[in-house]
Image (tube, rainbow, N blue to C red):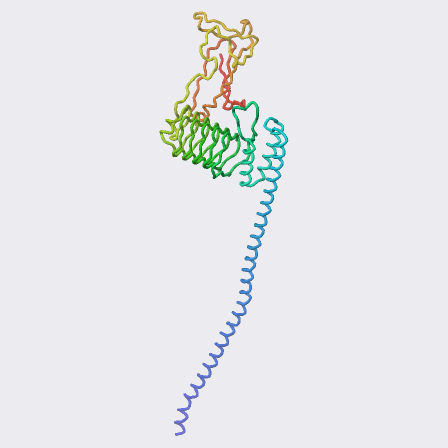
Length: 398
């Protein structure tokens, strides 16, 4: 019996040992898990504090940036207002003391003051400055009194991004040579105004009335003339690539030498135009190219004529000689036929009305003459009458 009890009690002891080992292992695992959780929480606390600190710092920085931006805008606004007020006060006093349109020195002073102020002002105040000058009649061209008074010359002035979006009267406005890119004159009257040589790309004249206005040599790429009256307007030598003439009235318009490539317009617009010589049409072709002798006195003028003044001569005396077989044909030469010194004549030819054709590489010319002895002729082609530079061609007897 004793032996049997021992055999029975041995497995029970083993079970107790296993339970004890399991409880000990479980306690150790629980402790390890608790330690890890404690470590994780300990690490998360400074991490959360750090993240919160970063968020607060970013928010404070953003708020400070907005504050500085607002303060800078307020400072800029005050500076712009001060410059504009000083300018208006200065010019107003000058206008009260003298008739500045008859005083060139006063106009030069106003031009200098205006250009300097425009460089510093924002877009809105540049607009108000323009209105001030127009209402002061400094920018109003009076054709009937052009010998009695002058207009303010603002050539080169920065009037970009100015927007006149309310109906206004700008008749006889004179702004030749200014910069008016990305500007607009909506629902405005601009009869007999002058914008020659101005930079006016992306400008809008929608729903405006522009009778008799001059845009000669202006850059008007992508200009918007929708629903605009353009009667007897001059676009001579203007760049109008991709301009929009939808529902515009072009009665009597001068498109001489204008570049209309890609413009939105109909056949009716072209038919209503008065002049289309040397113009590039929307499809890239050229209309009615002028083919004439550009050399003055280049035709047979008869021997009773003298050498005309456009010719510049390099000889002591130039004389007319009648051809031996015809009294209608003659030649020019030096009076002393025994002289061996060279004889030359030179003439400048203005080809401004062919500039689009020339720039497209499609212009051709023929320069010929009959020469004898030590004689030659020179022709200089000028694209701008005010700037005496151009291509020179010389012919003579070899």
